[in-house]
Each structure stands twice: as structure tokens, then as C-alpha cells.
Amino acid sequence: MERTIRIFILSVIFLASQINCQEAILHISNGETDREYCIVHNHSWTPLSQTLDSASQFPLVNMTSTLLCNGSGVSPDVVKGKALVVMRGDCTFSQKALVAQSLGATTLLIASNRTLITPSANESEYAKVRIPLALMRYRDFLEAQQVFGEDMQVKLYAPPHSKIDPSIAVMLLIAIVTIVLGGYWSGECERDRMNGGAEQGGGGDRKADSGELFLYSPLKVVFFVALMCGMLVLMYFFYNILVYVIIAIFCLASASALFSCLDAVMEKIGCGTLRFSVRNWNFSVRSLILAAVCISIAVIWGVYRNEDRWIWILQDLLGIAFCLNFMKTISLSNFKICVILLSLLLVYDVFFVFITPFFTKNGVSIMVQVALGPDASGEKTQGNMVEVPAEPQTPSEKLPVVMRVPRFLAWAQNLCGMQFSILGYGDIIVPGLLVAYCSRFDVWINSSRKIYFVSCCIAYLLGMIMTFAVMLLSGMGQPALLYLVPFTLITSAVVAGCRGEMRQFWAGTTYEREELTAP
Image 1 (tube, one colour):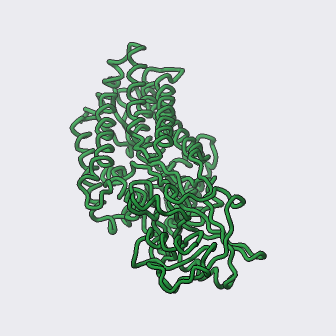
Image 2 (cartoon, rainbow, N blue to C red; image 1 turned 180 degrees about the vertical axis):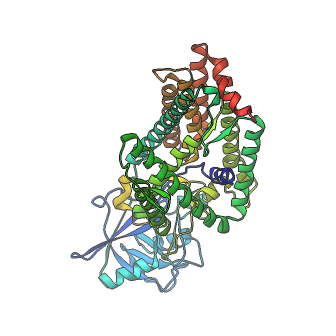
Image 3 (cartoon, one colour; image 1 turned 120 degrees about the vertical axis):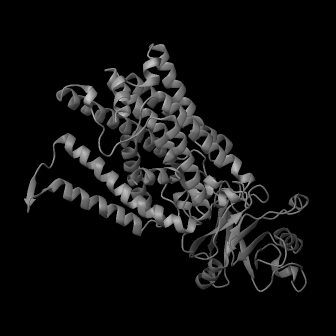
């Protein structure tokens, strides 16, 4: 049952994606009061000024009583040299813009009761529209009317969002620290087991921990990946039901993982050894306190999981603990299994990201749809459009399968919603299993410099840097395994080959093989 749950979780934690934002800011003032609101524009069609100071200011004319699909009934003297706000509907954005432009308006705002989308037009009409055009929420306009009345001066500007955001460095730090700690923990557990086996008369009698799972057969690895494929497809078709199952499992698994991590730290520093007994039951004060803390953190996350402003901190904390515990408990017995598993998961990742859009009805990859939820708008609009709800909505449930860090440079300007850099747990766990094997192999060969572990960690770091570099250059989210798997596998193989230990590295250690084949 435990193995099935782990496979179920691992099958949906692979992709990170980013949206190329085209939000802008509507600044309204009356000389005494200022307010700013979210608007959506098309920077390749009607570019806006990048700063408030450089933006031109115009008086706003309220024409929400009309759709402005034609100029009948509108006096040019009323709108000339001013910004207009009209209602959305009945005709295209470009048609409204051309009518406003012919009347002498300088800016067109389209108020919408529906989801705000990046405005577009036929290619032949792009060059005809020479005034700024943007969509705003109708409820925002009504609020502005209550604050300013009809005396509104407006400016439209679009602060540039730097592609290189500090959140990338934070995400890189989270990934590499998790990989290093997980590999180190796995190696130390292996050392403890070997020392325990030696004290009992030899390594051949060493037994795996009761909670440890081994992947040692190529056939079982293929079966493992096939189960992941099946479960991912099930998640795609039954997302609205299974998402709550995954959330519940994550709360339990992450609380248990966080307890395991904190307990190992306390054990290492020798903290909290007080125990007491109740009716022949022995209890550790440390364990009770840690259990209460870990369960509380998981429950708080479960209750406030859709609160963007701060809940990402708890999700990342639980995610780090989950990844660490996964790397410690799932053991790959030799490099051959590492090659097979990581290669199959690379194919799995690429297929469900790049190939499945050709088969889905909405053109969204199965991986993105599952990882980001039904409202994965960045993918639905090919990564260069945005969708902003016109009215407050209950957030759709998303799987807790990614590390999330807000884009700090855009924090103060997020009137349309917070923007996040994300990294799938799978991009940490999958290469992390190889890092953990390298760490255990260093223990088996008694490598004082931990050459395999260190080199694999460096390869992972370089692979992550390559991933972020390609993402920044292309402006699109990248399946990180496409870079991480080759970097880590090739580096580990080169180190083993240069040291003349490839045969042992490929096959694992003698006592490991004996244990795995023992009845």
C-alpha cells in the first residue's frame, strides 16, 4: 500500500512552467487621491509606457452605456483628446479601437464582466490601431466611480518584468540544498546500517530498514514507470475527484516526512531524550512534541492551501521534507537501475509534455494540465497570453507537487495576482535518487572525499543552471529532467570510468546484491 501511494504521488510531480505576463497598471487620480488597478494589454500591438512618470495623462470619459461598435450617437467633441471606457461585447477589440481612434480618443479602456484576456486582432488590423488599448475589470471601474466620481485622470503604464528575478536564485538554492541534504542523509543511513551489520558479525547480514523500498529489477522499474503513466492519465480524466485524494495523501505523507527529518536532526544533536511510560507503553517527549508540530503545520497548509500570499512558505517546507524523506527511503540498488529509471522517466516527461498536446482536445499537455490544474492558462494560450478573472473567484484546487517562490521584483505590482516561479518535486526527487545512490556507493567503497556524491551534486547544479538559462532565453517553462538526467548520468559514468570502478558502480556491491536476492 505504501509503495502504491508513493508511486501515485510521484506520477504527478514533474513540471514547472511560467507565464509570460502582459498585465499593466491603470493609474487613476483626481489631484488629491490616487488608485491603481489591474489591466491587461497586448504589448506587441499597443505598447504602453514603462513608468508612471513617462506615461501621458488624459481625462477619462465614461461611455460604459455603449459598446462603441460604431460612432453613431457619439460627438467627437466629447471624446477628442481623452481616454474612453466602454463595455466589452458585440464586436472585436480592434473595431472598438478604430471607432475610438476615428473620434479622436487617445486611449481605449474596455470594461469587462468576463475573464480578461490579452486583446488581439487580425494581422491586417494591427497596423491600423495607433492608440493604447487595454481591458479592465468592470467592478474596478465601478469602484473608481465611487472614489472619484466623474472627475478621473488616467495613466496607463506597464512596468517591465525582469526575466532574471531573485526567485530563480531562491529556487536554485532550495533544489541544490535538498539534493545535498537528501544524498548526505541516505549515505549516513547506509553507514549506520553497515556499522550495525559489522557489530552483528558482518555486512552480509545487514537488513534494510522496514520503511525502505528497493528498486533492483529492470522489470520492476518498467512496471513502476508504467504505473506512473496510468495514474497520470487517471489524474487527467478524473482530476476534480482525485485532486482531493492527493491533497489528503500529501498532508499525511509530508507530516510524516517532516517528523522524520526533524527527528533525525534532534537525534543527531542529542536533543530530547526524556521518556515516560503509561501502562507499559513507552513515550518520547521529543516525539510527541514533534508529532504535534508536524501535524499542525500540515493541517494549517491543508486549510489555507489556496492563500497565495504566505502559504507557499509552508508548501515549500513540507515539499522539502517530502523530497528528503523520499530520497532516503527509496533506494536504487545499482547504476544500471539508475540508468533505466532516469532514462524512462526522461522519456515519460518529454512525452507527456511535448507529445500529448497533439492528442488532447484543448491542446494542453497532460503533464501541465495535471501539475497546474484546469486553469493552466499560460499553456492554453501558448505561453504568450494571460487570463485574469473579472470577478473574485474561488481558486481552483491545484496539486501540491511543486516548490513555489513568488517573483519578488513583481511583488509590489501584482494587482492582477501573484506570479510564481515553480519547480516540480520530480525535478528534485528523480535526480536525487541517483545522488543518493552515489552517496551510498561512496560509503561502500569507503571514499573519504565522497567523490561520486560531490560530482553528482555539481552535475545537478550545472543541469539546473542550464535549465534556467534555456528558460530565460526562450521565455518558456522547461521540463528540467531534459537537462538534469543527462548531466547527472553522464557525470557519474565518467567519474566511475576514470576511477576504474565502472563494473562495481554498474552492478552495486556484493552484499547489496545478496540481500536483495535473499528469500
